[in-house]
Amino acid sequence: MTYRVVQWNTGNVGTQTALAILKNPHLELVGCYAWSPEKSGLDVGQLLECDATGIRTTNSIDDVLALKPDCVCYTPLWPDVDQLCTLLSAGINIVTTAHFITGQVYLGDDKREKIIAACNTGNSAIMGTGMHPGFSNMMTLAATAACNRVDKIIITESQDASGYASEETQRSVGFDSPMDAPGLSDMVRDGSLVFAESLYMMAEALKFTLDRVEFHSEFAPSTKDCDLGFMKIRKGHVAGVAGRWHGIVNDKIILDIGFKWKMGSVDESWKIEHAYLLEIQGFPTLKIRTEILPPRDFVAHSLKDYMQLGMVITGLPAVNAIPAICQASSGIHSYPDLPLTPAAGFVTV
Image 1 (cartoon, rainbow, N blue to C red):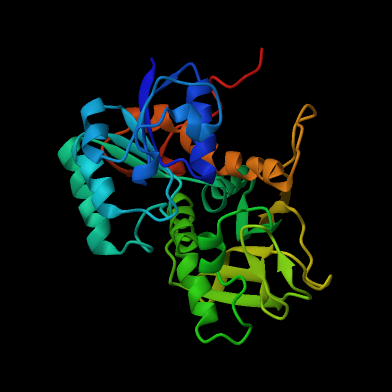
Image 2 (cartoon, rainbow, N blue to C red):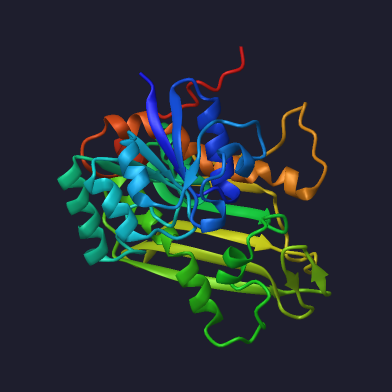
C-alpha cells in the first residue's frame, strides 16, 4: 500500500523528511505546506534543492485538507494545537518531530484533550517522535528486554551543536545568554519540557508510576567570541548547556534523561562525547553508545553538509512511522504501543 503524504514545513528537518518521502516507494508526496507567502506556489524541488517534482507548495491549510492525504509529516519546532486539531478532525493522521511525545507536559491537559477530541472526530491518530527524546527512549526500552532487574536508566545526548543552524532553537535553550541571566535555568527547562514527556512515556511502558519529575541544569561560558555564521556566541556568554530530567519514585531517581551540548568554544573540561549514551543499570547492566557517522561515500563541503546527518536521524523516525500511524487506532500514540517501524523502502539493493 502507498500512503499519500503532505510535508508541513521545509526547514532543517522538514527538508530531509520531504526528500525521504519522495524517495520511498511506499509513500507518495502529494503536497507541501510552506509557512511563508514567499515560498507558496513554488515547486517543492526549489525548496529541497533537487529536481522539479511537479508538486506546488501552499500556505493554505484548506489546500492541504483538499488533498485528503493519509498523513501529514509535521516538522515545525513548536506544535500549533489549532493546526493539529484541524488536520486530525479532517481524518488526517500526523507524525511530528515538533515538541510533542504525549502532550501531557508540554501542552497541558486542556490542549491535550483538544487533540484527543480531534482524533476521535476524525478517527485519526498522531505520533510524536524524533531522535532525543523519542528514538533514544525506544532504543533503551527495547534493550531492557534483556534484563531481569532495572534499577536506573540513564540516557544522554552529548553533542557539538555548532552546526545546527537554527538561531531560534539555540537561543530558546540559553545559548549566548549571559551566564548570570535571570531565569536561565527556567528558560532551558521550558525549552526542553518535551523530555519530561519521554519520562512518562518510558514509565508507562515499564509499568510503574512516577512520584515526581525534577529538572537540573548546568552551563559553561564561551572562551572566546565565536561567529557560527547563523549566530554569534560572545566570550563569557553561554556556550555549553546541560540539562537533566529526573523521574523519581520513593525519592530514588529511576529515569535520568538529559543532554550536554556545546556551541563554539568551551573549556576542555566540558567534555563532549559526540554520541548518544544509553545505560541500563540492573542485572545485567547494559551500556550502549550510539554514534552518528556518515556513510563511506558521503562528501561534505561544509559543516552544514555534515549536520544533515542530525536532521535525518531526527526526521526519519517520523517518516518510517507513517505506515504504522496510518493503521493505528484513533488517538495519541508513541513508540511502546506501535509495532516496530524499520526503514522499509530505504534498503539499497
